[in-house]
Amino acid sequence: MSASGNLAALAQEFPTYIKGQPLAGKRVLIIVENLPLPFDRRVWQEARTLKAAGATVSVICPTGKGYEKHYECLDGVHIHRHPLPVDAKGALGYLLEYGAALFWQTWLAWRIYFKRGFDVIQGCNPPDLIFLVALPFRLLGVPFVFDHHDINPELYEAKFGRRGVFWRLIVLVEKLTFRTASVSIATNNSYRQIAIERGGMAPDRVFVVRSGPDLSRLKKVAPVDAWRNGRRYLVGYVGVMGDQEGIDLLIDAVQHIVYNLRRHDVQFCLVGGGPSLVSFRALAQDKGLLDYITFIGRAPDKELFEVLSTMDIGVNPDRVNPMNDKSTMNKIMEYMALSKPIVQFDVLEGRFSAQNSSLYAAKNDPIDMAGKIIELLEDPVRREQMGLLGRCRVESELSWNYQITPLLLAYQRALSLDISHR
Image (cartoon, rainbow, N blue to C red):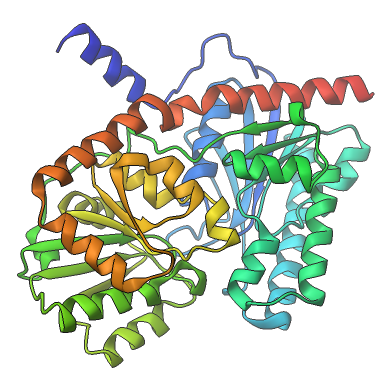
């Protein structure tokens, strides 16, 4: 391997020891509600990075399928899991879920405080309620780092198509979260602007830490033709199965490809779980498309990497709306990391991430998306070129190793703020 090749390989390795140990002797508590660790890839990468920088890291998160242990130490990270009701639906369901989460987060936070201690709390939304757990510790001089994963007012509108009492409550708790935070970590520049303009945070207290893929984990495996279901082409989707993800638009695009364009050589494989998985499978069945669409559900890494490595195109059907326009979707960078060209609707942050590695369909138009998919499938040279462009962009700008510096700067800023406020 050449010297440049050695450097490139080294840059892709996940750090286990960060030179200078900038957080040596510091103790960090991370609280995340919606996913268990290590399944939540972003938070798991943050936790291991902070550990590599010398910190003692504790995490509070829910249990989940395959992650039932209430405590375990993985890669030196102390993980404390608590039970949580199933995905909430309706006001009563959300009240039950959030109330249970706050109870366990508060109980475990105090337990960890007296057992192991912490100098910083990091709260990862959704929801924007973890500031309630952090507040009493803020009074004790512990800084609060807000890891801003979702813009919940826009998410509420995307899911329910309206504003109202709950929307106003969500805006209020978002504002209180920013007011409580010493520092905010934004996943992109759109979120950074929200923290500054809507959250009232000083620009020097908001750091962009993208959800860059870990290239030491995301690696191609041998293609598995069984996922093609006997067809020539495979189009893949990896992500959450929720109402706001636009899976219904993708199903409409498949219907157009199969019945109007009469293309029977394309298989679609959808990887991911979520509250709408059953209803989307039923929709595909009603349209006579189950033979053309494979719904895998939440999959282990082995199956995920098989699909990503086998597919010819990655698709992102997220609707163009204020939520998706400003959000960076992990699946986009996972497709790029595996050198896969993309078809998506023209959302602002999706275009920023993918640039020339994607084709962009007209706003929320499944017919145009279907056309873009077929156009790209019929041009293998273009597919290869676009895939290489995406991979190069991840390697040179977007992978997790480029997020380590801003993450550590955010923590150093939070700790200096805490010292100055005493």
